[in-house]
Length: 63
Image (cartoon, rainbow, N blue to C red; front, side, top):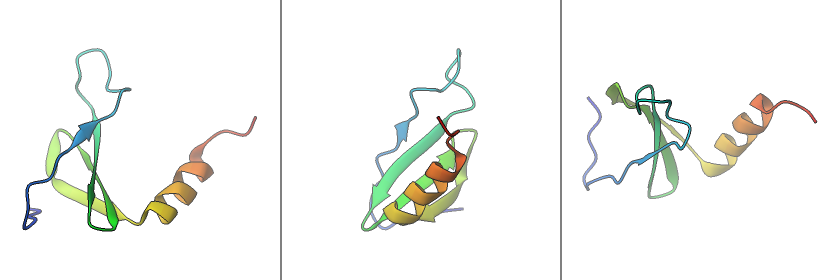
C-alpha cells in the first residue's frame, strides 16, 4: 500500500470512459508526478516530469 506523509490530491483523466471507470489518475508530490489506476489505487508509479514527458512523447503517434 502506498502511503504519503501528506494528503494527495488526485486528478482523474478526462478520458476516463463512459462510466468513469478504468481511470488513470495523476497527482504531484514534491518533485514527482504520481500515477495510478483508479481501480487499483494502492499501486502508484512515480516519475519526474521530464521522464514522464519523454515517455508520453514516445507513445504519441507521429503526425
